[in-house]
Length: 578
Image (cartoon, rainbow, N blue to C red; front, top):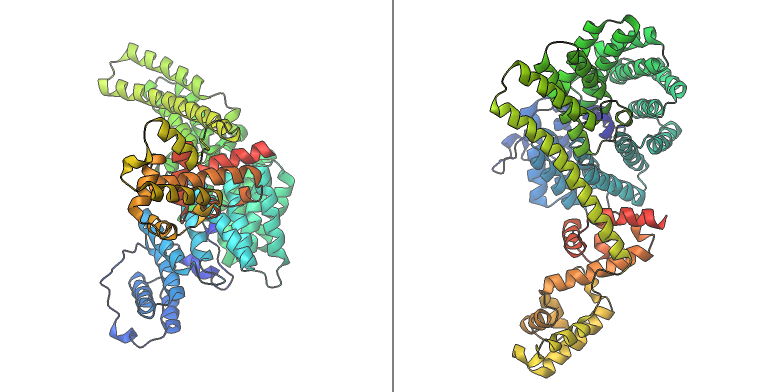
C-alpha cells in the first residue's frame, strides 16, 4: 500500500500514515461487545479506536464493537465506516477486497460526502498495488465521478493524482505530468493547505518532470521540497533526496548525485512500498556512479546484486532496474562462471515476462541491446558452452526449454488474441457480424425449418399474441429495465412464464436470459457507436445504461455476444472516432 495513493482529508491524514503499519485482522462473526462498551456512543468508541490504533488487539475490539452496534441499529454509514477501517487489518487480498466491497454496498445509496468515495478510493489503490490497472482505473474514475457529484474537491483531485500515478507507471509520462500539474495547482490554491498532501504532490510532480527529461524543472521542485521539509515530513525529504540524486545523475553532476543518494538512502523508510522502491532505485544509481565516476566494477556489482536481491524479496518490478541484469550478463560473460551467466539470463527473461504480464511500459527497454531475441541467442550460446564443460541434469535442460517455449507461446497468444480482437471489432462496427433480426424475422426462419407454432402445444392465438407483444417489446427497447425477469414480463403480457419462455425457446432458439442479454448488448453496441457522451462513461455506467445490475454481468454478456471485453471495444471505438 503506497502513501501516495492513500489520501484522506487533512484532519485524518496523519492518522492513516500510522495505520499502514497495523498487523493482520481476521473477521470474527461470533464477536460479543464487551460490557464496558455496551452503553457507549459511536463517537466515544471511534475516539478510543483513534487513540489506540497502534494497539492491534484494542483497535480491533473497538472497530468490531462499532460494527456490531451499527448492525443492531441498521446504521448504514457507521457500518460502511467500520468495514472500511477493518480492511487495514487484513493482508489476505480477497478478504481485504470483500470488506471494502461491503463498505461500498452499505453506503452506495447514501447521500454522503465521503462514502462510498473513501472505500472506492482504497479499493482502487489495492488493485493498483496488485498491478490490476484496469480495475484500479475503474475505481479511480468512480471516485472522480462521485466527488464531482458531491462537490468533494479533495477527493476529486485525489482521484486525478491516482490516475496520474497509474499513467506514469505504464509509461504515459506526458499525460501524467499534465495531471500532476493540475493536482499541485489545486493543493497550493487551498485556503488551508495540507502540508503532507502538498509536499507529496510536489514529489510526484518533480518525479514526473524527471521522467519527461525536464531535469531543471525537476530540480526546482526537489530543492523546494528539501527546503520546506521538516521532522514531520522526513519521509518525503528522503524521497526527494534520492530523486534529486537520480536527477543530478541525468544532468551528469555525479559527485552531488552521489552525496544526495547516500543521504536519502540512509534515512528512507523501507517499510513503505514507495520507500522500498526508492531505496532500490538509489542502489541502482549508486552502482552506476561507481562505474562511471570511479570505474569501480566490483563495487558496482555489489550494488547491482543488492538491487537483484531487493527485487526478488519484494516482488516489485521497476523498469529502470533492467540495467542491473544487463550489466551482470556482460560481467559473467567475461568470467569462467558460465552457470552464473546462465542464471542471470534467466532472471532477465523472467523480469521481462513480468513486465509484459503487468503491462508496464519501459522506455529504456526499447533502446536496450539486450532485447528478447538477442537474449535467447545469447542464452543458447551459453548452454552450448556449458555442454562442452559439464553434463547438465535433465531437469535443468527441460526447465530452460520450458522457459523459452513459455515466452514464445506468450508472444504468439498475445499476437493472435490482438489480431482476433481487431478483426472482431471491425466486423461489429461495420455491422457485418452480429445478427440483427427481430423475433418476427426469427419466426420466418423457424417456420421454414418446419417448426410450426402449433408444435409447442400452446393455442396458436396465445402464441400470436405473445409474438406481437415481444415485437413491440423489442421495438420500444423495454428490455432495458434493470429489474426485468420472466415473471415480470409474463405478467405484463397477461400470460404465464411457461408460455413466454417456450415461445422464446422455439422461435429465438435461446433461453429467456440470453434473449434479453443479447437485445441489451445489441442496443448498447449501437449506442456506443453513435453516442460520444456514452463512451466517456465507466464500464459500470455503461452497464447501467444497458439495463444490467452489475458491471460483471454486463462484461460477461458482452464478451459472450461479441467475443470482446467492453473496455477494449470502447477504447478502440474512441480511437476510431478520433
